[in-house]
Each structure stands twice: as structure tokens, then as C-alpha cells.
Image (cartoon, rainbow, N blue to C red; front, side, top):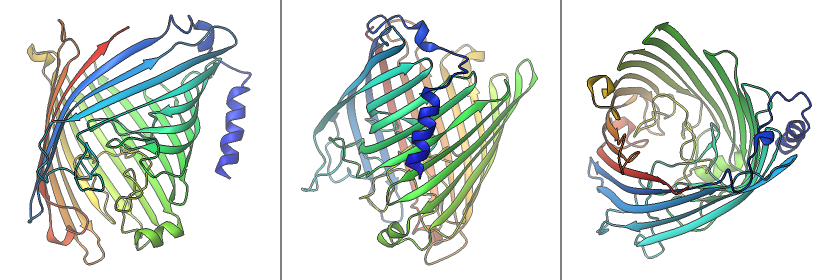
Length: 428
């Protein structure tokens, strides 16, 4: 049924007659609008687990090249996107690699992580007016299918995606993907995804108000719906209040419930965040709540073959309280107090600081009820503003996570440190 709906909406996109925009008319050509970029990334993650669990750490150097052509001129423009990646493991291993949450280099059958890995992909794209159809290897950023770029190498997916922006403020998306490339392994089908259909869109109603509605169907795994409403209320010249609501409803397929050992098939999770910004400062208060009968809580991302994950992208969690922990257990309720500081006002442009304290309770597992967890998150980020190293960024992030004994089946206590150095180079 969802396949049929995707086909119908795709036809509607491509045959729209009341177009208010025409990006193709502005095309300068295949070569003239093309770009080649290289990202050099040095990344390190260390997890000091508590309660007797072995520590994990991975360190690597990566080079990620992305080419995006322009579109040929004419009624229907044609173009090509391509990427190539290489990653080199810099740590010595020593049994500290292989943490699913870090996942820089996947362990092989021998139990050892690879010394390096390389992969690439390409996609062909067609544009009619302001509607683009892309087929091939892609990195989608949608609330129900969002690739993970928070590790050494990013994930990618193979399939078809239609994006339409014919009407000002309205973006529609419809797609089907049939393979997933794991961020820590080579090959297009290393994620174990059979297929995923996605459908939805967002609309900018006013300058202050935007909303979105999406749905997905992961074959033999789950069906998911997402809703978002975001309102930014200007108070004064340097002051604003932003309200952001996000919610997911997930229904696991019966066969997947049996295979994964889940105790139920339904989850609903939502978050509401209020952020008050004044000058260089921002203050956030957020609440997040998970309900339903599935002991998996809100299921997303990961890889089907690993611990019952679902394969719809490691960043498919557009919720307020997602840091090291996602605070997405069965029945969990969590609250956040957050603070942000932009040092530009103090004469250091490019330097930012973010802090968050999140506490969750009411966690249900197969053996207990009323579990708790809490996390203290800190992050400094600096982006070079001028000179030969312009746009180079250094990000230092830490989390202190403590999980009660009642919640140990769901999560584990630990201290985490992440250091990422990204240097983007625009070749042309």
C-alpha cells in the first residue's frame, strides 16, 4: 500500500502544473554548477564503562570526498553525485574496539577490527522544474531515515528519492531504499536492510511556524510515523523563544517481535523543548516521554543483525533528550535543563559551549519497574574563522552517564569522551 502511495505522490510531484518555483530554469550546466569537496576527519571516542563492563575506545583518520555535478540545461536536467571514503585505524586495538555504539571499524570473523576500510558510491539525478529524482547511493536526512555522520565514516543508503520544492515553503519527499552501507564496513548491503519506504514533507506556514509529517515502512521490521511542530517567537532584537515538538509512533511487525525477543509491538515517544535565547546565551527546558508495550522502547538505527536493531539510520531520532543516552526506554520519562554560550560576544568568534543535564525515570525492563538514569553533557566546539585553516573545527565532548541497577538491562553507566577534528576542503 505504501509503495502505491509513493508512486502516486511521485507522479503528482512530477506533473505539478501550479509550480511556484523552477530551479531547473536557473541551471548553469553540468560542469559550471559542479563541486568537489574533501573532508579530513580525525576522530576519537573513549567509553569508560562502570559496573565491571570492559572499556572501549577507537581512534581513526578518515578522508571523505564528495562530488556533486550541476544539472544539464533544458527542460529536464541530468546530473551525477559521487563519494569516496577511506579510513585508517590509528589505535592499537588491545580488545578495546568493537563497541556497537562507537563502531568505527567493524570486527571481522576473527574477532579483530579491520586496519582500514574504503568504499564509494554514486547516484544519477534528474530535475524537472524544482523536483529532483535521485537514484543510487545517497545520504538521506529525513526524520524517518537519517544517515549517521557522528562517527568516523558516515552511513549511506542505496535507492530512489524524490524531493519536490515546487511551492514556496513546501518540501515533499518520497523514496524507496533497498540497501544500507554500514559506517564501519565495506559493501552496499553491510547494514542488513531489506528495504525501507519513506513518504512525507514539511511546510513553512509563516516565518515563525513550521511543521512536518512523515511515515516509513521498514520491510519485515516496523512501520513508523513522525510529526513535528516548531514555533519561533521573537521577543526583542536579541531575544527569542522557540518551542519544538517532535513525536514518533512505531509499530513492530509480528515476525520481528518474535525474532528480536520483544515483549510488545507498540511505542509512542515525544519531546517538547522550549529554548529562550538572549544575546550570547540560550536556556533550554525539555520533557520527553515514551509509552507503549514494547520493551525495545523507541527502536531506530543500528543494524538488524546486531542486537535487534532496525536499520533506518543512526540519526533517526529527532528528539530533544538524545545525547549519549537517548532516554528512550519503555515507559521512560525524562527532563532536560540545557545551556548554550556563543563566545563571539566575548571576542572569540567560532567558539561555542553547550551543557545539558538530563534525568530519566519510570524505566520498565523485563525484570523491573521504576528504573532511572541521568546524564551530564558538555561540549566545546571551535571553528577557525580565517586563514589557511578556515572552517577547520575541533569538537571536544564529554558525557557522564549513570544508570540505576533496575535499568541495567536497558543501559549501562559510564564516562564518555569524544574528540573530533574536521577539516573541510573545497577543491572547486
